[in-house]
Length: 174
Image (tube, rainbow, N blue to C red; front, side, top):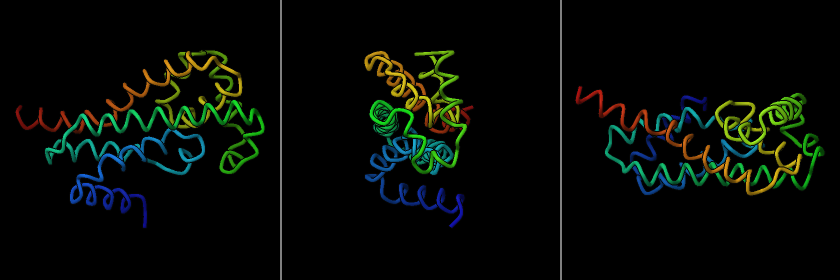
């Protein structure tokens, strides 16, 4: 099954089984934020499409948004913790080993931007996979990391879900 097929199947499943929307959104946001899975799981398109599904079906926005925030926070926190524990050795593990420039690029970004880098790294594909790891590798204070992590997750979940959920309603009214 190709990516479009996976996206359509996920949307159809959530449309039919709304109760599964929360764990699915949590899992997608978690996977998109976890260093190893984000390289394999292109969840951004599915989350954007789920936002449209919210807008067209009347599924409650705030619970799904909360699931996305919690999943994103948990994924980055686990990535940070892995970086703390494994340090630079993390680059030897698959799938990171397939992207040898990923950790050095994340390190340069983190060294330049620090806490802001953790915040903005969530919004840029390859950096999303590496900046939390690098923050852990560099022993960033956990409180500073978590503040940037939570703040960026709040904005990121809104960017992922709100355009489809509220934009569609706005277009209909307009």
